[in-house]
Length: 390
Image (cartoon, rainbow, N blue to C red; front, side):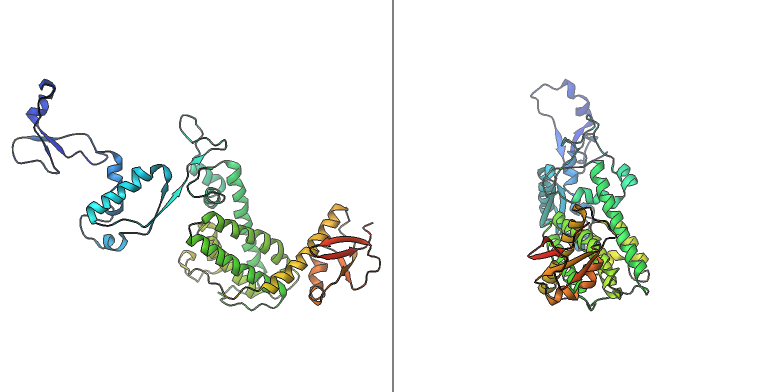
């Protein structure tokens, strides 16, 4: 029997004569787990509703009715995750069955997810033939990509759409994370070791560490609040747009960043691990083969206070670089052409970052004079003057 049999017993001779019994004539039956003493009794062959069996899941799987070690250790638990469509069918029944059998409420928090729908928003069903086999998607795009596609951009309790293009997009990000990690490992001058408190040397170092600390704190808070999509989105933005687009490019110009890069890699792998456990575990074991598995590593800690000055100063540098890049693109300036650049009201901080301003795909020559710089562009609150593009 697939399920709990109905605990109702009939005497065989009565059961065999049921068709001859008049409509309102009472039938002798017995209700109980075991049959009563007496003549031949037969149990009803049908089973209880499947949700009756599922309702005992929290304790029956732990050895109940015996007082096992597992039952004492894991019951009650803290969180259960399920779809909103079976809130009454399953969650309510588990609470009632648990209170009846072991006198405990089985969990404190219920996290509800929505239904998976197709690209047109239709519920996946056999009749429509629009279902997606997760094993096919895993073989095609990878498990981590599928996990991210079902998580990022989805609000708890709301339905979400799942389709090939969406999963493929996150496959691209997983590849990006792989390439970032491999690049860092290849640029290190020495074998990676665990760095717990890196010492920043430049403005870019101070900026990336304070940004990482902010992301660490924010992601941790989101996860504690069961806000998994905002956590992943924040981490995605940092990994791609701050680490890859800016700091790794800066590291090609400013050398001697082994400890910083080492620390960043270890931290982002830990932060990404709940969302993309497979690729992060592989990368971790490649970087630190003698350490314990990533899945049992301690969650990263925030190592310092927020450095607002470093953020503000770096924002100025980024604004200037972005403005110059846009100017070159809009005016189709040849890559090899060097443009003279004068920044009105430039501070000492700006000139201290001359190497970055001239080297991060801007191809400019920074000057303290406005000679031959008659093309004005806005860079945040500053005015930047460039020489003629042609």
